[in-house]
Amino acid sequence: MIEVGIGAGAESMSQQYGPQAVTEFSELLENHKEAANCKVSMGVLSEAMAKDKKIPRSAQDQFAASSFQKAIEAQKKGLFDEEIAPLTVKWTDPKTDEEKEITVSKDDGVREGITAESLGKIRPAFSKDGSIHAGNASQISDGAAAVLLMKRSKAQQLGQKIIGKFIQGSVVGVPPLLMGVGPAAAIPVVLEKTGLNTDEVDIWEINEAFASQCLFCINELGIDIKKVNPKGGAIAFGHPLGVTGARQVSTLLTELRRTGKHIGVTSMCVGTGMGMAAVWVA
Image 1 (cartoon, one colour):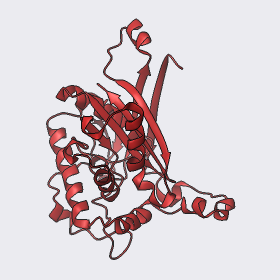
Image 2: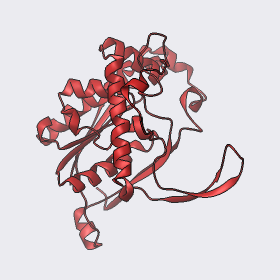
Image 3: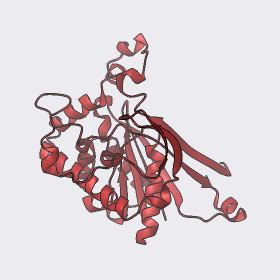
Image 4: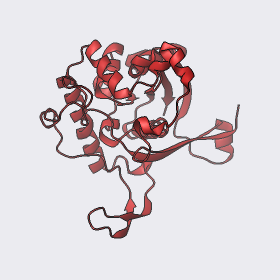
């Protein structure tokens, strides 16, 4: 339909996050139960989902620790370098109030030395006997990402190097209180559209909004967990909401090329009860 398009997003969750990010709700929302459910905090409903689906805290902490460990290893090996454009910015040191010029060239939420045992000491965030906490949920991060898409004929005409192709996408609805299961609903739809089965996918980039929801989707779909987020995910380096879609595509295509693999899938849950998935080929 178009010759050239850019899919880009930016988000500053440190400035705009949680209930204060939406200042006004229409009273009409309360007229419909499912619409009213859209206002429930994602942490609260993910906690309820973890209990409902019987996903223990120990499994969540193990998954989260693995995300940090994979991201640290990938960072040290420079595996993110080619997909990040360094930015030189003015920064005020919070300890000294001194303004400095620094170059930001890597995600700075990734922490070294995180283990399931160290995460086990953090107290639950949403209920006293809960399983979700700051260490097994995605971070509050700022960021930006962009993807450039062209018709193959236009890319060839302009002499652009083709690094991958978009095959097919799917968007589905799920109950708002179960929004975290979005990938488990969207992935089978896009696989059916493309005639693929789960074994044929080389790399999965599935959003880690919470360890609980990502684990549920992996288990529900019977995916090989070793193929999921091989360089870590949002638990380790954050999930700025407007950024994750493009960031996943960038990470996926870079890793497919590096490892000589072929087929990848990106997928995420979306607040208010949606899931999206897409198939990409290196």
